[in-house]
Image (tube, rainbow, N blue to C red):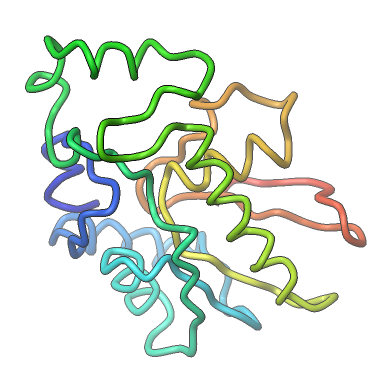
Length: 183
């Protein structure tokens, strides 16, 4: 969680740190033992909140940055709330879009976002060798795009959205996604 998420603002690529509440919540979840103890490889989006999360949970580990795993580019909707945007025609067109083709002015469409994220996920999986545990610290929208792609008939797009500090563990057998579980 960041200041923006606590205020329910669209926060895509604004480079914000974790909030105090966000850091405290992560430490609680860590204490509950919900995260893997370690990993062979670590990845982040490079955004400050992802970097903060990784260091809080695993310390100063070596990580690779995949910029393609950054959150959605909300363009002119960035750092604004639904209340601020709800009367704008461009915003209404974007939230009503079922095709994924409507672009946030100055940002990207859901289709462009998904394409970018899946390209980054492809790089991550290419760098992961057989029997390695790989951990990626990224963002809710990124997680949704990956999970919908890997398990398309399981849930609808927004049903994959995890709570802050949560995500999914994916098991591959041998090169195809086999199963998932909640973190």
